Picture 1: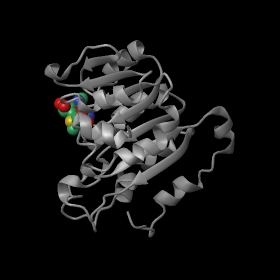
Picture 2: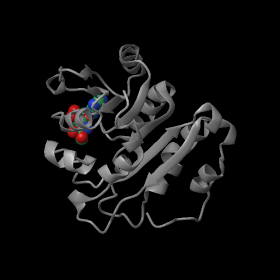
Picture 3: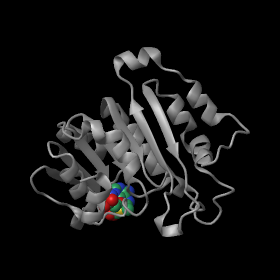
Length: 221
Ligand SMILES: C[S@@+](CC[C@H](N)C(=O)[O-])C[C@H]1O[C@@H](n2cnc3c(N)ncnc32)[C@H](O)[C@@H]1O
């Protein structure tokens, strides 16, 4: 089954938001590997079940503030706490070990996105992925004024300093709101960051990053 089919089966809203083809494009080479995936935001566990099914040799971890969201079953372990708490994240990582994939689908506030990235990025393995869903929600205007505020504004205003301070980001992909789709089914901004491997680090081109921050460019997003 494709990831989209699994997402529909497990009833995750990632299937509705058109996120899953973007994930599958990046994660399919890892499908049969023993990945360690951490998702911030569990809710009813639909996505954790989808990931467990997709990565049949992997370990799935979840974080949520709600005790009732905790799931304990084979290959799934959950932690109750706040994604913006660096102490909590350190405790989580002590138990999970280094992570292959982190997905932030939690509180969706800009400060939470950045705090979690700062706490968890150092624990992503070389070649691993850090993904932020609904990245445009920091303005909470994406749905009403998409033509005025784009995902690139998010990158410039929220992420610029954070990203510049990391020398081991091999690749950043920013997928903006798909305004042609109805509000509920829309992609509300997805950011993928890939951790450099040692060989990649030597070849890193920072120009792509600078392009994101330069004024005046506003590609269709
Ligand atoms: C959109 S839902 C997660 C959906 C889930 N990732 C899925 O795809 O099935 C967001 C979840 O984030 C949790 N949450 C909100 N604020 C949080 C915080 N500060 N730290 C951790 N989790 C938080 C909420 O309790 C909620 O369950």
